[in-house]
Structures are given as C-alpha cells and as structure tokens.
Image (cartoon, rainbow, N blue to C red; front, side, top):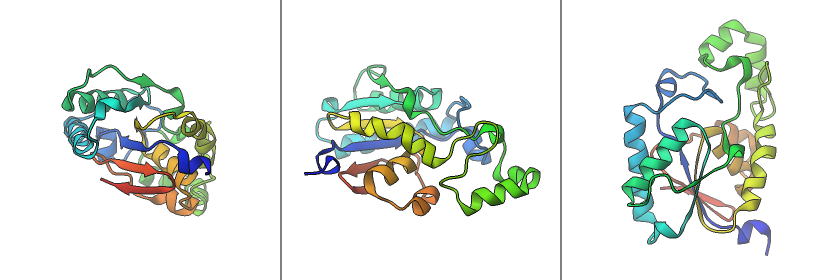
Length: 199
C-alpha cells in the first residue's frame, strides 16, 4: 500500500468569513478576525462534522495559529460538546503570504501592478508575489510534512491556500485546477486517501 492509501482521513475546515474576505482583500498572513457570518459558519462546520463522524471526540484537532482559524476551531468544538481550547496549533498551517499585496483587492493589484498581476494569472501555482510572497508550490513544500505527520483521523482548521495545497499534494488535483478551485467556508472538505468530497 502507498502512503496515501494508508493516510488517516482529514476533515479540513476553512476558517469562517472575515470582513476582508467579504471585501475581496488578500489576507495572507495578516491576522484578521472572523466577522459575524464567519462565526455562524464555524458553528455550521461543527454541526456538519457531528453529523458526519459518529465519535468526533476520537479525532485529533489541529489548527493554524491565526486568530480566525483558532476561533473557527473553538466554535466548532464547542458546538460538538468538546472543550473549546483542547487542540493543537501547527505553524506550518498558516496561510501563504501575498507579500506586498496583502490588504489589497485583486482589482487594486491589477491597477497598481498590471504586469506582475498578469504573470500571476498565467501561472498562479508557481508565481510568488513581490515583497516575500509565497507561491502555492512553496506552500506545498511547507504543508506536505503536516500530511506525513498525521497518525490518526484529524480535523484541520486552516486556510483556502492550504486546502489547495493539500488537494494537489494529497489528492493529485492538477496544479492548474487546485490554484483556482473554490474552497468553501462553513463546509467540510473530506480527504480520504486520494479522494476528496465536500460535506
């Protein structure tokens, strides 16, 4: 059997909505909190998990250390009757950074730096934004060890970029598709071996 066939199941939850999500701003590693809609989405993800897994207390729980992912995890755990703060943080799960573009909308990026925006549009997976930004390819290198370290079925609360990296690394989704796929808030991305589905 290959590693992917024996890998534990991942229940991936993207953090709930923030005001920057609503405005279409690139958050990256800026620590933007959930808004009221995001809090409801976090609780909805908890209800979905409870309906999906007979004994959610048996799962491992790991989150990105950013405030929006921590609050999502804590609200999710509270809904299913678990101690809100009994989970582990993993720095490797932070969102990719957009460098100098963080805080801007894509419309603003295209207006301010049309050539660079065009380069990214041509190769979303491999393009790293200016000012220390990361590409999805770089993100895969950062998060692949997280996949390899899993020893039991796990709830991971992280970010849209991290989900795209997991879909490419764990499920074999093409980098072109993974770079553009919608990552839903309030739902659960179930990754079993090389298969994935939304619940």
